[in-house]
Length: 337
Image (tube, rainbow, N blue to C red; front, side, top):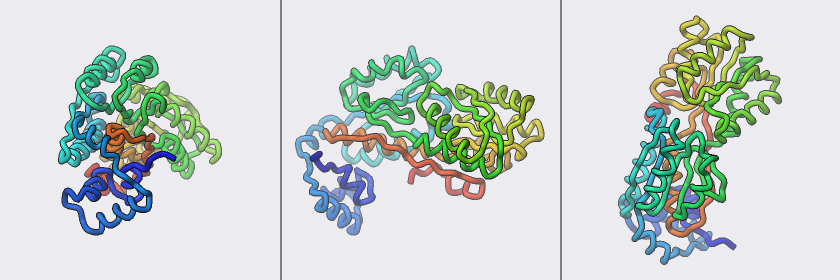
């Protein structure tokens, strides 16, 4: 039987790993009710602290984080979650070094920067680039604990913390099927697992609901490319819905506004940042799917610290949420809940 870990206790008690640790070690400002719930969960699960792992973690608390620099509006959401998590774990002496790379130049930048971080830290959180399959074996050979964030990798390389890509695609197709008969997809780059799984789940759900998928195009997360693709759609066999699993919904909406088609073609995108929030307000974007990057980042930190303590860790999939303009106020503070 696998040993019960503090991660299991935290999950059973409905708290973070840091809160569970504070409750069990009688440190920090933790309510009596929380201490009781954590203690009961630990007793019920038969949890026994791994003191050797705790001592090891006590000496090795430097985390390296590698992620792209663009788009800043999106990776700023990841940084918020990372900052919140590190502030919480800072009480225990954990610290982080964040390094960024140009995602479109990941072949040249990703591995050198990841190896440099690995040489100077005790654990890694990384977001892979467009060509990660080409250098995944090099990532595999890095032996310190590591967690992939946003882009899922094989479990033999590391556990991952990502949004539920299949659930996201199904959610988008379900939404459009209520108001559209024909939908086009504009994804980021189908070479990346997130977008490939989005395509598969969206097209399967669309077929089950009688929604015809007219085309699937790659924007490569570029606004200019997304504009050209949208203009081409408007000049061809016009769909009445568009789903983009990339961050380019604002570019799509801009073309529709310029052509007087805003609101006439339903658009569903991803995430809530300044530009998508404005599109939701003016009606050019019908809905957006919140991937909760702050929460992804917090879970990645928690998972990595479990690995650094010598505990077993498994991949985490974050539930996507459909956001309409009427609910926008609940998301504009970008809180991880």
